[in-house]
Length: 164
Image 1: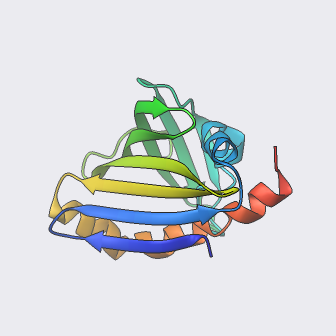
Image 2: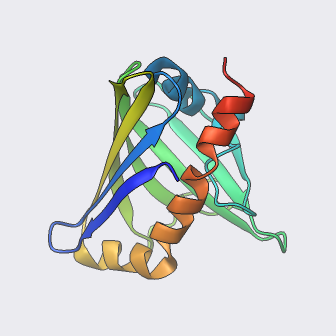
């Protein structure tokens, strides 16, 4: 399992995830930069993602939806605010309808992803900061830890099958 640590801090409104992947930093960054690759690992197992638009360039918006086994679509978006290729990126992360329109009643967060070498592997630290305690509580109740563990659990297999 690539996740080493998953820490939720409600008072600080943060979720910090540390994971280790068996691929170099440039390869892990490329996975997140390419819409056809990131959609292979973004949704939990059984909820594949489809990225409608995606470009890791500051000022752009990525839109996607995940499809449940029953065919229901759950949308999301990233407003890309910073990119430090290949060391990481920062996005404003939010929920959306299946067409990519933000759902204002749902929580938003800032997701900061940092990648650093760990021998021949990559250590990824993701700090997600929510605007409110209610927002972080809501995603915790929705199962963010289980969903994230499932999604990230697919990464090493994908990278092994697609080393370039």
